[in-house]
Image (cartoon, rainbow, N blue to C red):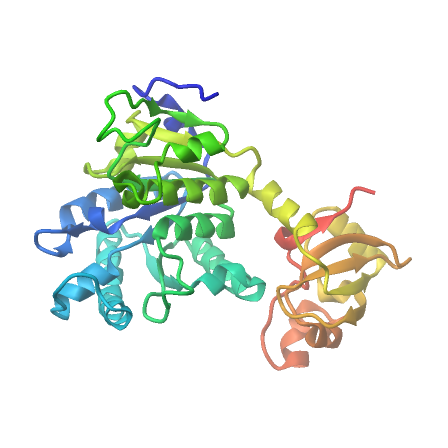
Amino acid sequence: MVTVTPPANNAASNNVFDTAKIIVIKVGSSLLVDEEKNAINTAWLAGIASDIARLKAAGKDVVVVSSGAIALGRRLLKITGGKLKLQEKQAAAATGQVLLAHAWMDALGTHQVQTAQILLSPDDTETRRRHLNARSTMMALLGLNAVPVVNENDTVATAEIRFGDNDRLAARVAAMVGADLLVLLSDVDGLYTANPNSDDTATHLAQIAQITPEIMAMAGPANASYASGGMITKLEAARIATAAGCQMIICNGQSPAPLSRLEAGANCTIFAATLTPHTARKQWIAGALTPKGTIRIDDGAAKAVRGGRSLLPAGVVAVRGQFERGDLIEIENNAGTVIGHGLSSYGSDDAATIRGHKSNEIETVLGYRGRDEMIHADNLVISDS
């Protein structure tokens, strides 16, 4: 049974912004690109840039997942006609991504906010080694107070391997960076019990505690216009985000400064997360992966990791098994008892080479500057016993 919450004055959205530390904002092509001019909607972009700058000033970290590259590149390359061929999409994306990156840089630069472009393919979020690389890059950018602007790497993606929509990409990015809140800016103000364009009895749902089959059915069949407009993919994104401990909001982003409007209580649908991002990530590491190797650590390192610190190479006394960077490995204490699991920052060969060495010796030993940690605290789960 679904509880219907009145849509007016959604004060819960304000509280979500107050408590969120990392916010991912997904912007679709229909908002960013003026369809009549087929160019950047500069007035709208200025409004969202002002919103983002205000969030940054309040101490929030912000990641933007932005569409629009293909639409912009298509205009510049004068590609006409209906549905584009794959190679035409790739060519348009390659051209449009330059414009898109500059547009975001200029808009946020007005507020002295630095930006960086990141292009992701599905493998970057699903292959653990590449996931760690992409996550490390984005976390470094956030640490440097920049706003990563993410898009699917359409220049190399094929029809078989691409995400297919930026809603799901945004959800995977939110999971990757441990975001507290994902905001999908759309042309609708949230989820309804039915298609509001064709059903006068459709009721707006302000809050969703759990994504049930009944909730999924509200998006309509896969070939319905309401679904093809993106509601099904938005609900799929909600599944990904909430499972990673990230709350998600669907709201209408068409007005100027849409985040300010949302914080003021505009209609939206909030999808609750039952876990925190930190807890969800730890659960994923603890239970969703199969260990590929084992490292044994000394008593000092065991005490440090039990205290919530990262595992450094100096505390490692032995390495067993064959594993790659990003693989899950077991952690043993000096007595040979498994006390935890973590994602290794090094492959087994390099891990064996630097074991027992201080972090400032890694470059001399390996010939390159790697991570200071053998396993970072964020990628480490220690058992309670």
